[in-house]
Length: 141
Image (cartoon, rainbow, N blue to C red; front, side, top):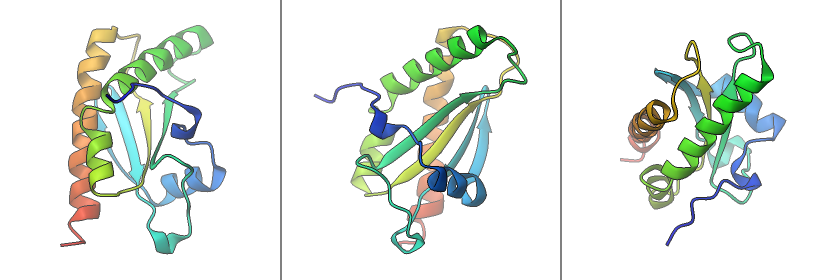
């Protein structure tokens, strides 16, 4: 059984990797999330830590002035991601041995309920899986 954890190795902290993600990555919006993703290849020289997938969850300070609200949304997003990452995305990436860096940015206007965030996180992760297969796996065939 796979544990639904979200450990330090799964969080993207490397400045080099973050820079590569935002300069070379692709993005899409699946309301209330904007996802930027990038898969570093061996020739790029970028090496991921122990985990093959690393993620950043962020909420804009411009949209939520109060840190309490930002942190609430980040906690809700983190919980949604933690519970759903092993349903489709992680096995897909492991099967294709595809390292992936991505960020999930909250672009909603106000505080949204957990149930809404959960259902849309599922859609966003599914779309991320489809985009990865189009961009990174189509080349291999």
